Amino acid sequence: MVKLDIAAVEISSRCNLKCSYCGRQHMKRKPGHMPMKIAEETAKQLAEINPEQHITFNVYGESLLNPKAVDIIKLFKNARAKKVLHTNCTIYRPDLIDAGLWELVLHVDAIEGERYKVAHQYLHNGRKIPSILIQCLVSPETEPIITQFIERFLRFTRDAHREIIIKYPILNPMMNVTQEFKGPNWKYMDRIPGVVFAGRPYQTRGLDCPGLDKAVYILSDGTIILHCCSPNKELAIGNIFEGIEHCLNKPETKAMLKDYPNISPCKECIEKSADFEREKTI
Image (cartoon, rainbow, N blue to C red):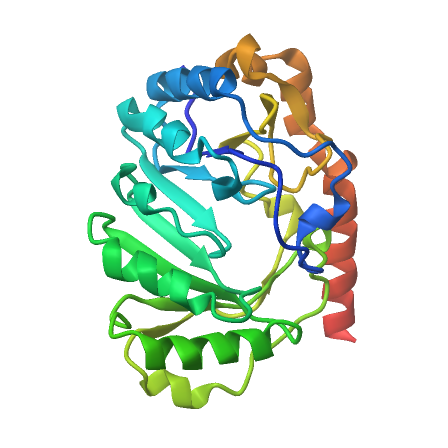
């Protein structure tokens, strides 16, 4: 039996936003929703494998655009792994509250207008979800949006005891983040209850990439890939109906894991990460 830390399920590869820093900008495959047949097979196999950490519902799209999203999440009730949904916080689904999630992550990097009210609805009504996080990816582009969101949100809701996680961008060339950003001048926010700064800027270190042998990603059409930085199935190893374990044990998969520094997109990521390191030392 294979051992995995994480499995990611792409409930939908469609999205209602166009963020310039998102790796989805590289995606050329046809977007679509995951059919129930593929979701059922995925849930069945992951119940047997039981990833040690969690099953996350997101890869290259907004899961809640799929009308069957909540039904799909409920299929994974037999898996012991913690179930986590990432959403861009543009859609409020009241039925999501009873879907059996362990964590709901509300990404507000692209929040505009009054979408802070969507975050409030989940926080106010989502008491059955043990963990609800508001997560921000700070960059020069997103800083004004995030600042506006936090100010409006904290004025609007009394649920600020739920954490607002402010993250810095992963310097990942495949996600259009290739320059270091040291963060905004938000020192005053350290004193606001519920606002948490998570870490500091860091870059993808190619040869220490943690994802290839510890996770699988099941795309909306059933394709299994080895890493999320594979928008066009460059790191595909098979299809869910072949079986996750079978695909991981294929000779060609093992060869890919062994030689990934020379395989696209890993090669480009490693080279650009090395360029970044050289620039820092000059």
